Length: 433
Image (cartoon, rainbow, N blue to C red):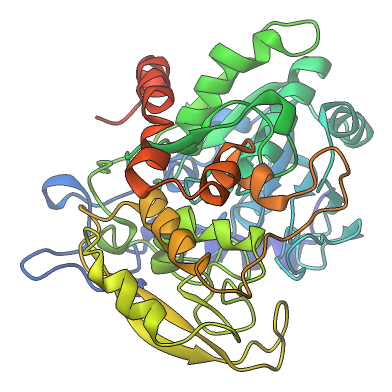
């Protein structure tokens, strides 16, 4: 669908500014003393979307393009990639596909935007949330897609749903013989690999395939891993024609706060890079009856419940976990668990992102929380797998070890071999060293 000339002119001006403007520094935490925003050796970090836009989207010309994206698919001046593409003469965008929370980001957790015509571009936006490969293929056929573009900021964790939207989109693209292009972005929590491997029996929307919890890859690298390791085992097998437009000037040693890039919340409850850093571990608390801070200004950094007290922070600080401190905190969630009730608990403060270990820290927090009589696991409606924590952690092992009173070292040591094996398997798919 072609935009009206006046709209096209407006969008073209926005795109030109996007290519020419410097990257914006918008992060919740300033770079450490003595460092400046930017990539390795002070180079500017340029996401794949800006690389492609600077070339006038040359790679997409002559194709029927479907874009899988959300509000994070932005250029340097915060203009959306879809708006940029729609402003280009000779570029045929046949549809946009919105994941969880929707293309424009108006929906809360577990929700999406229904199919609609985007008022800015006139393009049809399809609801792709929860769509498996077959349903996604049907949507692509309906729109007439022959090239799928994926541009969403991930947060580096298996139970964040966007990577599985990408996986289903890759399966669908292979099915309809479409090519697949990933506009890559930095992983905000870097290269660290940690946490348990998902067992196939516990596959769900928050973990579809056997990768470890904190995978330490960009979405472009994950797409390469999916294409090489997982798609050949899916359906009739085979690969998708894949192209990754790489980030320039970025090293996995660079934190999101140091890149100087604009942070657009990839979902309503990940408002800052600091949230993403904590979420890699504290996402576990979604599987308990404690509040994970939804309905507060610090989701996944505030953890608490009406039955906790000040001893919780004291006990956690006494563990002297690397790179983190716990501030005694009180909050009243405006929605979600314990809505309208005063919760006692902690604010998680990452003091050293290099030393901080998100998954072991969360396990330690669970161990201490279980000492309170009010603690309980959140039950799911699935009779075969009745505990949500099992889906988040990828098996029943974590819950069973916690219930059995196992210690922190024993629990985290249980997946050490899984992490090593995954690190070996991912090595040939990495793009940034």
